[in-house]
Length: 193
Image (cartoon, rainbow, N blue to C red; front, side, top):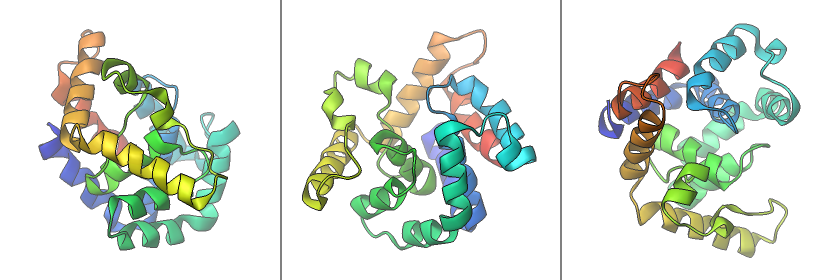
């Protein structure tokens, strides 16, 4: 279940409703500083208990609370986005999302941009400054940072970023993962379980 197979299913699911999109954003937030295999358990707990989930705390709770109030507007902004920059800006509104995780949301929502996380940063020898952006910076600076991030993703292709990351995760933990396709497939499973 490579990017070409699983990503369109995820995109369709996320674009069906504001609630599905909010669940996707929470999956992305729950994945911050977590091993990918742990996200499925966290998503089940979050979906069963919402704000009472033991995984929805600190900044993740701020994201959850923001989504309760703004998920409809976020969904409209994402659906209306015509460019990668507009789509990134939609997800960068969300508290708790920086450039990498907003890029991951773009990848899950529309198969665009991509996630340059710590794993990708190291293995692709990308300058860490590509990931840094103060959300309170001037609009022109923000636009330049978003454009630089998008450019870094496009130079590698969204599908390649996804597939190669999934293969890397599988290789790092072969007792848990069959292969990269297995890692890829659980993105959808975690979201719809």
